[in-house]
Image (cartoon, rainbow, N blue to C red; front, side, top):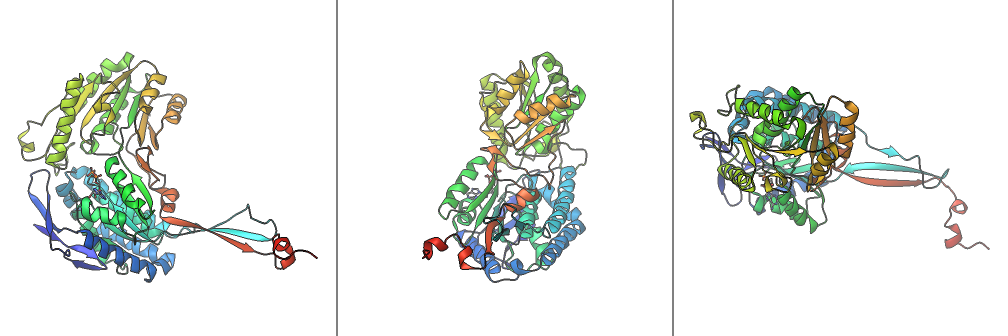
Amino acid sequence: MRFYQLFINGQFVDGEEKRTFSSLNPFNGETLATCARAGAADARLAARAAREAFDSGPWPRMKPEERSSCLKGLSDALNANAPLFAELEVADSGSTLRKAKEDVYLSARALGIYSKYALVDLTEQLDAVSRPGISTNFLLREPVGVVAAIIPWNFPLKMAVWKLGPALAAGNTMVLKPSEETPVTAMELARLIHNAGFPPGVVNIITGFGEDAGAELCRNPLVDTVAFTGSTDVGRQVMQGAAGTLKNITLECGGKSANIVLDDADIELAVDGALYAAFYHQGECCEAGSRLFLPERIADEFVERLTAGARAMKTGDPMNMLTDLGPLISRRQQESVLGYIAQGKRDGGVLATGGGIPHDPSCAGGFFVEPTIFDRVENSWTIAREEIFGPVLSVLRYRDTDDAVRMANDSVYGLGGGVWSKDPQRAMDVARSLRAGTVWINEWHLLNERAPFGGYKQSGIGREFGLEGLKEFTETKHIHVDLAGSRDRKPWYDVVVPRH
Ligand code: ADP
């Protein structure tokens, strides 16, 4: 069994209260790791370490090249340890090995990209000067200070890197709190950070629960900004916690993304795309395509093919490279998803496939749910409105494209969306009309670290990735430089020293 301590001020330490918690392997229910459980006092210590590293340490004052090389070193170290990280990610999060290998590769790549972002000079000289001819005006983008990053359990390593990369590239220091469900790869990352030349206190990583360690980070006056990814309900709590000290926040929260198939779509491609959108990582993705809109004319055939595709997906041991769906993260999550399925049945959904726990003996010890498709769902039902975060797809049938778009936008969420069509212009028209932060045309799930990602409506606040994402970790300072040179060229001269 593995054991992890907290990583505060460059050292591995026990929590103040010496409490611990276990992280389970969701495939077999066995304890994978015992972790120190950070309480509010530990969160305060970590915030103080980050504060001191920001206020008086070398990190924000280093040359960008030096920060860049630390991030590049971390990227290389992650690549060098890729097999270990992939294996631990599978055991801790129930991710399939196929997904975990890609996650590690993409995480190392993202750190490489952020090592380049560390070199970007965001300073702007304004064309629209305050006093034409007698002033120059600059915008500086300075690090915001201490970042608290709070992340969920679905993509533990990627989420850690997606916060760490831009926060550090912009010159901040930070406290990262992984989810209590999946602390392992973040703590392995701490080991790499320890050896990668980051000054002490620049990155602090504390394992613990949201109610104490997480809540303290949101409230703590030494923290300047909270970067959160997780459920919309917890996002609201983060916002409330941060309100006391008026912190900046970015929230990347839930979704109920609409996947719209137009009647001219390549059906085979759209069926595969819909399965991928809904069932990738057992549906535990904030941008999952969990509402599928089909035109009446092709719906029967489409659902038939979709059902056959879902039945062919292999649920089982996530370490098996042939497995498509691994276990859900926890028994609690399994019960929650089964509860939504029961609700869907009560509301009158036509269960096309799935709906229960897989019978395969290899699934007996884990928190599995079958890939499940409900046909003829109404947009007002719970399974079409709430984020299920499991392998449950709702099929909604529509009359015409306006009808589909109206229903797609009738949601409190607005994270992702998709359109399948052979006609680029029709697809683009629908893409424009969706109120969502990312829309894929004939694709799904593909994120780009150089293009902003985030949600409309209750899916979030702010953006990750790209220069927009980097700027979320900066404060903007306007510097006005007066070039008038003499008192009589100043417009306020009249006011302060009246003319004779
Ligand atoms: P999920 O439902 O995906 O687990 P949550 O939104 O519950 O996601 O949790 C995401 C992260 O937020 C986790 O790291 C969790 O510990 C943390 N968290 C939970 N409650 C709070 C809270 N009240 N304040 C701050 N962080 C919290």
